[in-house]
Image (cartoon, rainbow, N blue to C red; front, side, top):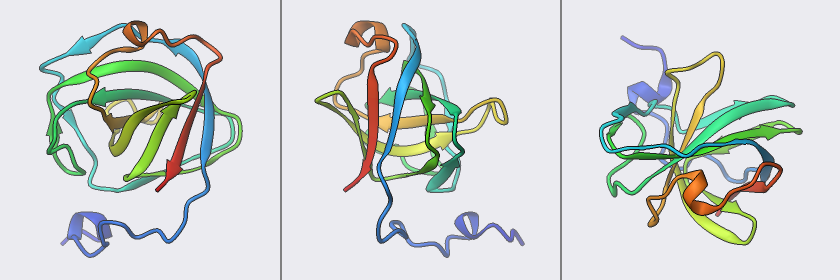
Length: 144
């Protein structure tokens, strides 16, 4: 039997009482989208990102995207550098500047340990280029 508590289903859907906001800046902007990407979201509902770490971020418009699910539709925003580390958890709001992009629904680790991909559910299926994202632009993840 797995010892991993998320895989065993013993961790509640929202285990955090509070999570400090995470702020990062785009270091690369992507202009790609896939309707058949088939990201395999990890069963975990949170990931720690150390000081200076870089993560990839994409959006999906799939309503049932949750930890442990496969996500076919993914539009990639870009790579984000976090100067100060912290935790990003499902349910956190993703905001680029003043725009609310959506809600974190999971993490894909296919490229780990190089980087994790943060997957955000958004009503707007558009990549970083289509959104007009610029390098240096601020992105914030905040627990709601």
